[in-house]
Amino acid sequence: MQMYDLPDRKGHFGPYGGVFVAETLIHALDELRDQYEKLRTDPAFLAEFAHELKHYVGRPSPVYHARRLSEKSGGAQIWFKREDLNHTGAHKINNTIGQALVARHMGKRRIIAETGAGQHGVASATIAARYGMECVVYMGSEDIQRQSPNVYRMKLLGATVVPVESGSKTLKDALNEAMRDWVTNVENTFYIIGTVAGPHPYPMMVRDFNSVVGKELLTQLPEVIGRQPDAILACVGGGSNAMGAFYPYIPHRDVRLIGVEAAGLGLDSGKHAATLCAGRPGVLHGNRTYLMQDENGQITETHSISAGLDYPGVGPEHAWLKDTGRAEYVAVTDDEALEAFHLTCRLEGIIPALESSHAVAYAMKLAATLPPEQVLLVNLSGRGDKDMNTVARHSGITF
Ligand SMILES: *Cc1c(COP(=O)(O)O)cnc(C)c1O
Image 1 (cartoon, rainbow, N blue to C red):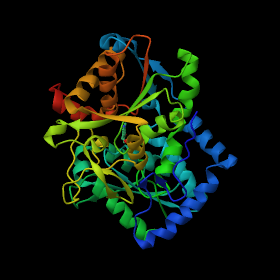
Image 2 (image 1 turned 120 degrees about the vertical axis):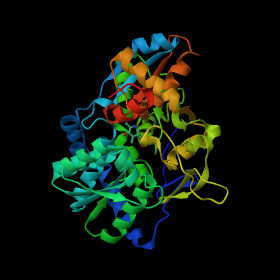
Image 3 (image 1 turned 90 degrees about the horizontal axis):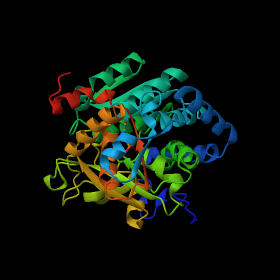
Image 4 (image 1 turned 180 degrees about the vertical axis):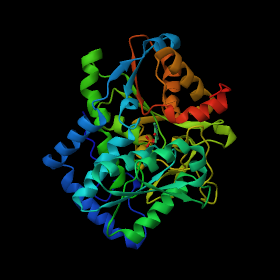
């Protein structure tokens, strides 16, 4: 097996990653990097994290053979990693608990977070309630409209939700606003970033916390199928559920790693969020990575039916995995994702998140081209309860 040991000490994955922030944050990021460097190999810290994952989140999440969906596709067998069964309904809680524990070790009692669909906001509000911390969540006012049930959940959990009115009033604007808060309140505040983006050490830290998913798979799959899978598939917004599943498999060269982006209305329409498939490298939110941008380097508007994939950047480690060819990146349209959503509901009795439905859609397409003894593992990143309104609007099924 080939060694893989990235990022370097400055947070670089080849030409990607790094630290591109205002001077006022450099000290805070250095402090965080040093603290986390110690904690990531500290047995007491890792035991504390493992305890929370087992007793509060309900890990390990099962692996499940989607038998009827596999039959429907014809060809390879499709299996799910059931992150939808986690407390709060998605993979986001894994990383949020990890960062909240780091915050506690650093003596910070106030946490802030950005959120798009609201899943990361809910996870942050949840853990703040559990640890008795103050929680402020920044959310674009457009997203507040689209995702009102999650806004209400955050408020029930005791968080303050701050509407962001700048720019397109969505996730990237919420991220900007959270960064601004952090600059002002860095003494007592910990910023919990919801995906493998941002300045070093965030992409590494979020990956490490989510890689519990891939580590579980490494032992679970030999138990149920007698070997490792032929491919692992995951949807990619910022890329945290995908990185979590991929990371422990990077040295396993015969396992294909496939990231599925949102093609929205189609890659040719310009209305999509397929950053790795159609973007170019640049700098956003503290790191260098692929971005959706025009000829002048202006960030362009993205579109996806799933708010969780609607982000114009992507984690820098994915940029590196793409350039080196270790992972493949493809894109699936809104309509294809919706079709996979309905099939998963009716054939498996599982209502998947629209984000996860993108990975299911591509798995079904790929399965049809492969022999029945091959195994495709889909990381089912979350459950679809949050998407009822969106699906009802698009499918004409009344709510
Ligand atoms: C937030 C979210 C995503 C996208 O984020 P990643 O960082 O790319 O994983 C995917 N699925 C679900 C269910 C989410 O809540």
